[in-house]
Image (cartoon, rainbow, N blue to C red; front, side, top):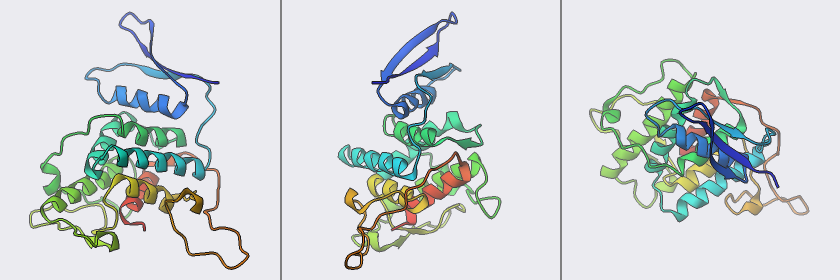
Length: 249
């Protein structure tokens, strides 16, 4: 059985062992959680087999599905999860694209750190995209902060019992422009995460129990999403994942 070790460079330049993991994604997530919490620059890395763990959309879907189930069991709010996600994304902000393992690790790390506090300035900030489409980390950040600001507005004007059928964010007077659609369908981390990956890259199977497709024709195979290999993702693609988490059904 393979193990992956989280390492850091000590003050004397020596190698310090931090923790061992039986999954490359969990090791990368641990590294991100450590990096987002330090006040001074430290060098962390993962030692272990370099072969990717997340190769297909199906692999990524199962990671997100599991994370959502854990978040539901821990009673995380969606706002808390997104504020934690934004926090752990900071060490990755200078990359132009992320390998699928890093995407999975970023979302996994969000479930392990304390969320960033809500900044009231986000509600009135101009978070509109400068261009027609997201294009880089700053735009992905605008998308996530827009969602966090919407969720804060929903605290004062709850979406009500029919929220799963779709409801517009309140966006009261004084709200800044936002980078996301006004419509919301998903208000908890489990539903958000499942819809985020199902709507953006697919990979779901009806047997997972999270998605109920239309019944197949008599004699047809059970419905599932086409499984395909996935490549490194840009921040624009990650922004699409976030928007699907909000609006995909």
